[in-house]
Length: 235
Ligand SMILES: [Zn+2]
Image 1 (cartoon, rainbow, N blue to C red):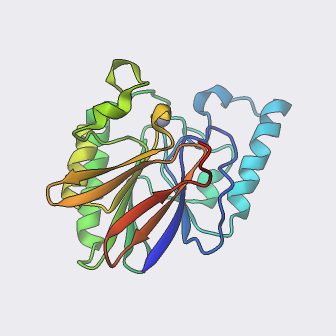
Image 2 (image 1 turned 120 degrees about the vertical axis):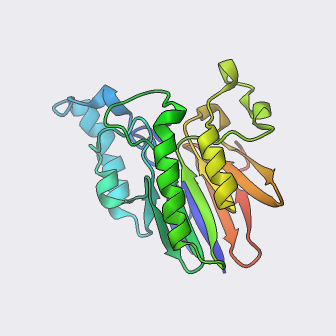
């Protein structure tokens, strides 16, 4: 089977990108749906209501299933995104025949810009256990993670990120164990609009940073390959 997945991340209280939903299987949002603590307590602010309303409508009215993980800004759900979407933070779910999705995101209750390895190790361990229970040999897996794993060669992608960027060894460990066909990730805005193929042991994994402009991930569960395409070549 070939599945077309509409992907985005880090939309920060903006409406997700306008991608063609015809013949697509689902949306994947890699977290930071809202702008976190800045808007907490601003319920009476007409400007904030003006910004939130179209985002809330987008999540409520989607004709496709939306799968989302929490980013560190998603400490509130004032656009009701997590109410209407499928929150897969810390979970492993089957989203189609032979296609399974695992989610890594922010599990804390308060905003924190840079979680530590120790903050994410527990969620990675529980996702690994859940995946081992659910995955069948014929399944293809996608990891949807707000936090990027550290891979050899990732440094080349950190050109715009001071101090070498943000990445997590425990998420890389999860990738090495689970061998997903693709990793869809967020958090580092300067990587948005890029993808690369990373060789892990004997397997290629497509690592995809869709960003707020979004992109399309096409997964072939028979060949276990993934291809990235962009809605516009003017990026
Ligand atoms: Zn983030």
